[in-house]
Structure formats: C-alpha cells, structure tokens
Length: 352
Image (cartoon, rainbow, N blue to C red):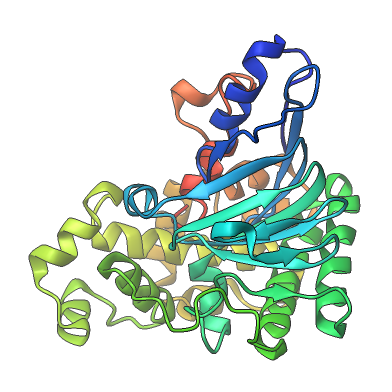
C-alpha cells in the first residue's frame, strides 16, 4: 500500500505536489476558481499483482493526456474510474458526463481529457496484457461509460467499492484469487455493456510495441515463442523488434519475465492449489521443470514450492516478489514530493 496527502504541505506547494503524484498517468491543470485555503488531495494505492486499486479524495481539477505525452510514456493500461461523489466529464468541451457511481474507461494509449469534480473516487489501473485477451474489442474501450442504472454498470461499480472497502485486510492468497475474478468480471461487464457511449467510435491504431506485446501475451504458452517466430508472424524486421525491447532487457528476457510472472501469480492463487508446479510451468511455455525452478529462484529469491507455501500462509516474502520493488533512488518512504512507489508501480505494472 502507498499513501500520499497534501495536508502537511505548505498551501502554496500542494497543487504542484499533486501534479507530481499523478504525473505517471495525467497532467493536471487547475480550474479558474480554486477552493479557499489552497488545493487539497489524498491518494491511497493498493497493489493486487494484476492491477492497482486507487482511492482518491481531491478538489476539482482537469486531467489531460496529450498525444505527445502518451507517445513518450507509452503506457499500455486501461483505467476504470468511479466517482463516488461529484462526477466529471470526458473530452474537449466537457461533452460526455460521468455521474457519481458511473464507471468510465480510459485507454491510456490514447489522448484523453477529463474534468473531475471535487470529491472521492475509486480507480482501477489494469494492464492491457491482462485485460485485452478477454475482450472482443480491446481497442474500442476508450471513453466508454457504464451507467449506474444498468445492471452491469451497477455490478461493476459496487464490486469496485467492495474491493476498496476490504483492500487493507486481504491476505495475499485472497488478493491473488480476487484479482483473477475481478479481471474476469470487468471483461464480462465491458463485453456485454452497450457501445453507444464510445468516445472513439472506430478501433484505435496500435503502435508496433503494443502489437508485439499483445502477441507475446497471447502466445506465452508456446515453446516456439522466439524472436524468429515474432519476426515471421508479425512481419516486422529483427532490428525493429529488438529496438522495441531494448529498454526491457531484450525480447527473450521480456518473454521469460512475463512467463515467470504468470507462474508466480498462479502459484499464489488458491484456484491452482491442486495443480502440479510442473504443469503450471509447462502451460506457460517452460519445457524443463528444473530449468524453470532455477530461473524462478533467480528472479524471486525462492523456489516455486516455497512461493506457493508462503502465499498460502500470507508470508510477506512472496508479497515482496509479487509487488514490483522501486529502484534504490525510490526506496525511501513515499511522500507527495517523492511519490515512490506509486510511480514505479504504474510504469512496471505490465512488464514486472
């Protein structure tokens, strides 16, 4: 869990501190009429392994993702936003209303603008690699609004509230199982809700890195998932492929880390408690159990068997492996002036 608040900061520093806190997601612009006494905001974030849950309480402001910004940070997440009190509005001119207990969806790979009223809200940040494979139209989610008076909108909103209310009390195994169920519920709600409220009516064009990551995620189970396979099946050059994954340690490293991450999540999930560790590894692309165990220990500091046992007992050791760790410069106690680990969680959510 990470917490941030402006209450102890000088009034003149509060808005700038809030801007820095949410900078991994949005640029924030003040409204013309600020409340007396300066800007007030607070954020609590919980890491569920497969997604982040955030509870915010903030004065009214405008939140923006420009086209240049989204190309620079290359975030590949969906954001589900649920206002609990004052609502807001999507897009230029504030044309699409989001009322309290409506659920709005952003595709963070696309430009966005949102006017948020003062009050509390709950948000889920879900990586595309987790949710998109379950969606019929993963590129047609931006700007959707699930209305509170519809059955699916009401169920999703109530589910988000329930997770938040109990977030601080979940044991690791419970949180892991709940994350799996929550992702499935989100996919069901988005799959059956009407499309009439789309902000972007046609599929968004994917950039190359996003297309490759989506292909990798859908094919992690294949032993033949190699750079050669990706080059051949996606019709990209080898240099293009390597360039996209240079900052992530290379293509093969990325594939291996995604497979290990999926294995760790399965071992922490009581739904897989009766499945052999070898089968968990095989189903995620590892062909040799001993080799898998060595890679797993090197990545997470414990054997697969120890990770499963620690998760069942709620041991913090496996929680530390499940939740991405900030680098040395981010390891200090988080404050608004230095918003680690939240910023680190956002950047690494889809690739940890």
